[in-house]
Amino acid sequence: MDLYTPVGRREIIKKLLYMGGSILFANLLVDSLPSSLATKLGPENSGFIVEGIGKQKGYSVTQLVRRVFDAAGGIDHFISRGDVVAIKPNISWARSPGLAATTNPEVLRAVVELCQEAGAKKVRIVDHTIHDARRCFAITGAGRVARETGAELVFPRSSLMRKMKIGGVRLDTWPVFTPIVEADKLINIPIAKHHSLSKLTLGMKNWIGAVGGSRWVLHQDINQSIVDLARFFNPTLTLIDAIRIMTRNGPSGGKKEYVAKKDVLILSNDPVAADARAALLFGKRPADLGFIRLGKRWGLGTFDFRQLQQKKVHI
Picture 1 (cartoon, rainbow, N blue to C red):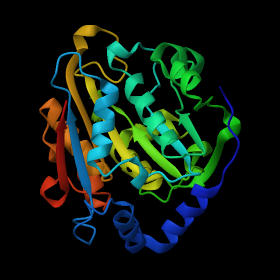
Picture 2 (picture 1 turned 135 degrees about the vertical axis):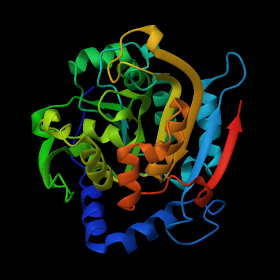
Picture 3 (picture 1 turned 90 degrees about the vertical axis):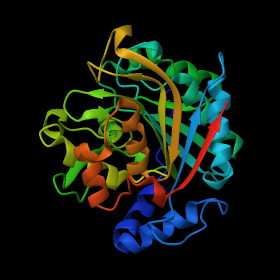
């Protein structure tokens, strides 16, 4: 499964982003939008958010993923032929999908297949797991997705970590999982769940699984660490998996009574908005979550959905 070879292109793009600052960032957001959604210019109005809801009994998760991307203008607006795509799920725990500790493998498979249909040269599934990686790959279903789709499932090892300039408030230089930053496009697919320290773990927090170093240190000022990493990785898209959510005892869970079925997907190019919308599924006010407040303050996005192009789809 571990077929990783360096690519290097995303690292170059990232350096340009830091050189260009916020103006270049805003322009790239506008350029990445489908024409049907980018109706207004400017960083306040260039984002979009699509919510997909599975209402019918026995609905297809795969079809819900496809409908959500179609509502955003189609995968071709985000992934180009020849791209190397890194997909960052949360598969950190050796838990079966029904326990809602890890990204739903049906969601993961659907996104991999969409990227391949768009002509991606390579699709890589990448996460720095907490439990033993091979057990995580097997039990979460990520290994099966990789085998059956031909995606590369990258085994986390120290040789793939490189210290990079994060440039954050708390994190200056930190070991980064290089297959993630070296891809042309980056799609974040977290699962929505409770977290004992940050209250919730959603899209922005998923980047803690994209780096090495001491997680204990990252957790000392967890909200700022989350935002520092989210600002650094700057994904093409965030797709929050809320088919099942973990409502307590997160992030590892372990019991079915901690799980609630929501049948929701949230797709956005605004990571703050994606997290803010997902927070409502837990009855949380976005402004009450430290990493969402900080994300807005640092210009990563907004939790005011009126500033975004909004769509909702049902199946």
